Structures are given as structure tokens and as C-alpha cells.
Figure 1 (cartoon, one colour):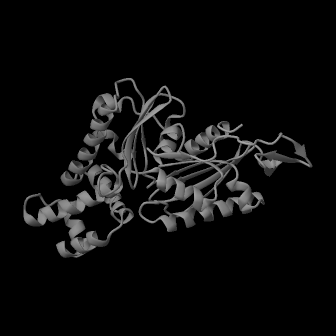
Figure 2 (tube, one colour; figure 1 turned 45 degrees about the vertical axis):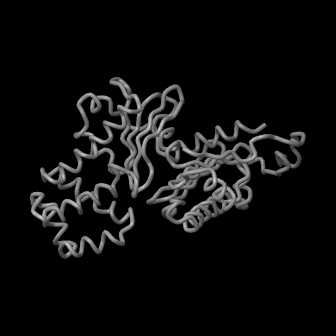
Figure 3 (cartoon, helix red, strand yellow; figure 1 turned 135 degrees about the vertical axis):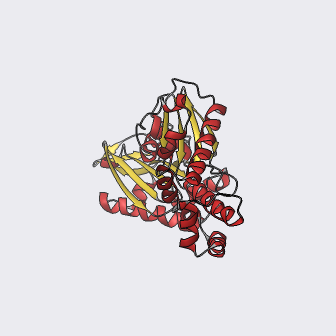
Length: 320
């Protein structure tokens, strides 16, 4: 995980004063209504959510995909759109929001350079920019010990013990994202092609895929241009087929669950430690996990945006 803290120190801090219902903070004039507010962004390959918590009330909006490694400029536009919508809702200037303590968790933030580019592009002055995994982990577990398997368009497995976070995976569709929705969709297409070669049984799932794409040539053509989101759109077909007893679909789901169990063990998971399955496809793996893990599955405490807001409050405590 890479993250960056912007202007953490309080150099040249002015004397705190209140005049005409305005709060002066590090030379920035903030209306009293936003004096304790925080800004949070949770962005992934499917959607981006932007939220501002003011006096205990969360105002949030949803925009399009925001993966800064696959399309930096488009991701920034989605985030700016969300911030602008929140500013309009609160009847404040966009600059009022970009000066707030903020946590930005985005798919595709793989190093400090990308984090700095995001901070600069959004004009954030007091922010921590990271990948999207910490927000998902904090949202699901709050401050409790446990493990999450997060499988949406992308995937990762993470643990939290004594508030220390550890992560495995999340390296994108080319080098990782096992058990994710796009991985499931891609796996299903590969198995359909294997059935054409006669090295995999033809099942209802593989036959439907061949029919839908017009045969093997259609599958190859689609795979050559498909985005992770487009691969992921095939995952519901696989999970539905698995429930119906399709052998190939069951094989795919078992492979994903085996990956989750293996990563959990490598992160030190032990029986009696809570497990949360987060993301769109994760809950479908529950019945394929080892019995010891199934018995520890718990519903998440909150969602990634909840975790992003909690981390934004930590950022606010980093400033004088």
C-alpha cells in the first residue's frame, strides 16, 4: 500500500480565532458549518463515491469508475464531478471542500507519484491519498480484529489486528485480482474455449457463452477488447449457473474460494477470527470455503465509504 500525507505539519500556525462565525485554520477561512467536516472519496473500477460528513450528517454522491492507473484523467473528472455535486448540495464553494481533511482511496494508486498527482489534480490541501484497500478494510471491520475478502471488479484479501493492516493482492487484472468478478468472467470464457477443444466438458454455462458470443471466434474477439468491467458483467451468469449445479461454474467458484482461503492463511487467519466477504461477488464464495472459515463469516460493519470517512477523521487529528 502506498499513501501520501499532504502538509502534515502546522508550520506558521496562526492564532486560532473566530470572527463573524468564521474559523481561521492554517490561514484558511472556513465557515463554522464546515469547521469539523471531513471529505472522503472511495473509487474503484465500477464506481466512485464522494462524501462529506458535516456535524454527523453524511452527504454523498455516486459517479462513474475511478481507477487512476487505467484512466487517470477520466478518474479525476469523476471525482471532481462528485465534489462539485456535494458543494452544490451544501451551498459552498468547491474550494471549501478541497481544504477539508480528506481521505482518498482509489483503485490504481500504486505508488507515491500517483498519489501526488491525484492530490494535485483535485487541489486537496490536507489529504491522505491511498489505494482503495484501507477504506474497505476499515469500513468492514471498524476497529475490530478480523479479515476481509473483497471481491468486486478487482480483489484483495486483508487482515486487521490491533489496528495494524496487512494486504494481499489488488494488483490489477493483468497480474492479479484472483476471485474477482472480472477473473470469474474471464475464467468462464476460457473454459468455454476449452470445451471447443474437447478438454473440458460442455456444460450449460459453456454452451450459453458460445451461443451468446457466436462461437469461439466471437469470444476471442470480445476478450481482445473487453475491459475488466465488461469481463465482470459475465460473473452473475457464472454464480447463477453454480447454484443450478453446473459443473464448470462450480469449478470456477471453488477455485476462487480456494484462493481466498490460501491468502487468508498466509495473512495469519485462525479459527474464531471474524471474516467479512465484501464486494459484489464475495458472498457467493461462502459455501465453497472450508467449514472452519464458513462458521466465522460475519456481516461487515460498514461499507468502504464508511471506512474512508473514518480515515478522513484520522487525517483531521494529524493537524494542529
